[in-house]
Image (cartoon, rainbow, N blue to C red; front, side, top):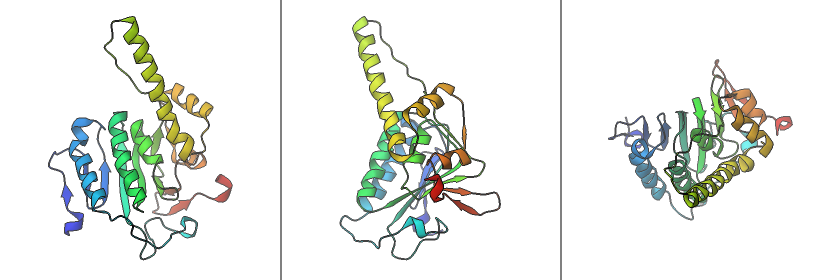
Length: 224
């Protein structure tokens, strides 16, 4: 195994990193992601500022893993997770968005389930480079919030904060997919309504489907 593909996983969590590939296979929380976030930070810091890469047109690609030479660096995120903490998810995405500003492509691959916060990570891959396995699912739901409050003023503050968190939750879906706010609310209220890869492609939540036969199906213009 080359140094570039060396697995960094001293925490023994199922969330770990190997080279420029991030594996999110566990609950997303401060304990399981502490080492992962540090390693992502180091990986992003190693990317140079101001480097000019050859432009890449995702419309001309016939395989999202077979890219032209001298393309931007690619950070892969392989996902099979039930989700977890929204603040921890924001930390991961903040670092990956720094990588975007440095010219990197964020390529996401939903291998099994991308539920809750894992769904947020999956849809925020670079448009044109978001992949789902044919038998994978994506879950959008309300999630769960817990507050220890015992005063009316604290209850009001908690409710205000909760509304702000929900608004933050909506924003990536409205930006990176063609879901409407009413559709988001419908899926959230259903709570455990997993969306198939086909549905996700229609809703612009993924750009490619990997079939059981090892073929890549690309999202076509009519679906856009």
